Image (tube, rainbow, N blue to C red):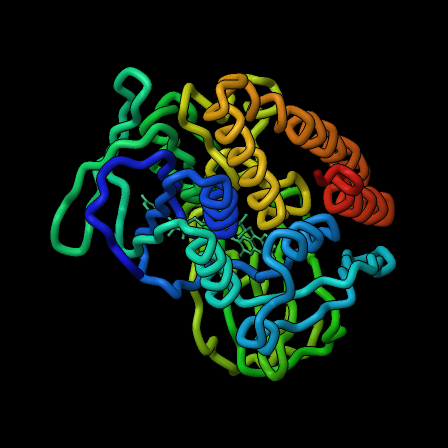
Length: 376
Ligand SMILES: Cc1cc2nc3c(=O)[nH]c(=O)nc-3n(C[C@H](O)[C@H](O)[C@H](O)COP(=O)(O)OP(=O)(O)OC[C@H]3O[C@@H](n4cnc5c(N)ncnc54)[C@H](O)[C@@H]3O)c2cc1C
């Protein structure tokens, strides 16, 4: 991707995921000199199922980017919805047509749209330091074999769960981290191929299975030091209950850091904007409790951050104030959804599998539908 010699920017967006790409596209469309920094080489994959889970999220994609081009569409499958499998409870389903993409094509397309709108995208460009001096943000960037210093009026931290922007500017915030994993088996299992299948045995011990053609994907999150054990348990469960071949080895597996939904967000202890630095998507903790939906949240907060910056450039309110005002609704909904967890826990502790299953599906549904009719 192209690299100009420009060192002063209106907006630097750190991270070329969906949130960063859309925020950059919106800023560039408003005429702001906008740069996206992406530490990996594009096209890059991301450990993610790739589902655009919420209908309102699908609406944002359609409105902001249009139809998927053929090279994204050809790799996308459409799931009919979700199935929740809990021993001793009926299998519950939720019907939401869900495009399930590959992130290496989806994110590349979105970055290309940002470029077409006028943003520059530098890949293999890693943010290593960030500070504020007066009203300017100073950034140190590590390129492939050199370093460069840039300044920007605004920085959007769209650099995911393990955000460097967040660690540098909010060092006091310590979110709860887990290992996300994805394991591919080149075989099928006896689960509905058009469903995203969920297998919870507790509030956080949950794994997911879906199929793409002849491949079965096992995904989930694991606590520190328990990654192999967690994957092994899930795999044994599938062998015992859903016909996974006990002798088959994974074709490949990958993983990433995952930040769990943080109570500090809805208690107000963590506010994801400081002066001219705004955090969006996973970097800002915008990962829905219960469903873990994060792609549409990244897009939504990306739009909110871009419009806050554009308004601030027009001399209206400060970007921090406007952005926090925009996302307060999201944060309060997250607080409400997280309280569903208490209901689920009560059912779990009383050994009532069916009530647990009912509460979890209701909460999953709420988590995905929370922002219907809320898209500007
Ligand atoms: C196993 C798994 C499955 C999931 N499935 C789904 C799903 O199906 N649907 C869904 O909605 N959500 C899902 N999620 C969550 C989803 O992946 C995230 O919420 C979503 O990717 C967040 O998007 P983002 O734009 O905030 O950040 P990301 O997509 O994480 O993008 C951040 C980018 O920043 C770059 N970056 C990081 N540090 C730097 C740096 N210092 N300098 C420059 N660049 C940097 C990274 O390389 C990356 O490209 C899943 C998560 C996991 C772990």
